[in-house]
Length: 124
Image (cartoon, rainbow, N blue to C red; front, side, top):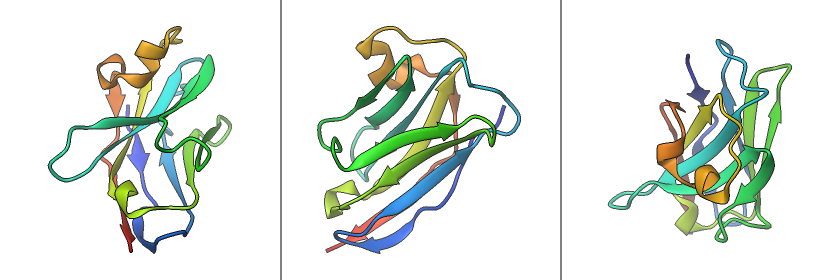
C-alpha cells in the first residue's frame, strides 16, 4: 500500500495551497484518513482527519479543509490563510478501520499506513 503526498512548496503568509495524497493501490473509502505535520525540532502533530466524522486541530480550524475523492483515490488538504507557523512536513495517513473516537482520529499511533511527506514552507 502506497500513500503519495505531493503539492508542497514555498508560499507566502496568507496564501492558499492544496496538497493531495494519492492512494491508488488501496481503497480506503470505508476507512479513516488523516493529515499530520511535523515541524523541525517538534513532534508530529495532528492536523485533520476524515472518516466517521471530520476532525481538525484547533490551530487550523476554519482555515484548513480535509476532503477526499474516492473515485480518484485521493485525499486532499486545502490550506487557506497560511501562516509561518504552518511550516512543516505534511504527512497523509490512513487505516482500514472506521475510527469511532476523537482519540483514535487525532493520534498518529492509530494509523497503520503513512505517506512519505511533503514540505510546506510559509514565508513571512
